[in-house]
Image (tube, rainbow, N blue to C red):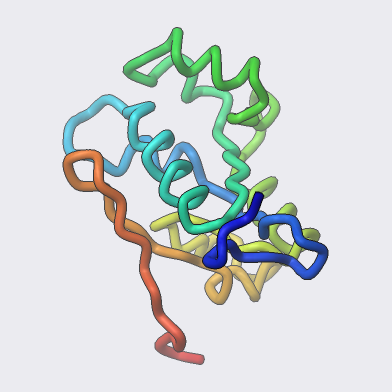
Length: 144
């Protein structure tokens, strides 16, 4: 059942949002990426009626603070790993373009602007503080 606040893509299903999982995991202070950040962002997106699709670099599995929890989410299909030796950013940007989806990330993807000139317009910036997530709600962007 969908709530009145659920975002729909026109066919009644929730709109997809790509989540730059490596960026989100590394967003807290400290050296080690946190699985809880990914879970908190996904929970927030789901609460707001979106369907989060998390894509991460393969190396994250060796760095994350909760490896067992991470592996469970990979097995469940909640987290999708880019193939080893590849850049998850390419897959995130490609899927976002294909699916006409937004991207939750604080990365500006400047190194990909030539191939993905629309990337900046797809970004939803965020902050995670003590497990709480705030998503940016801009209607216009500087430079647009």
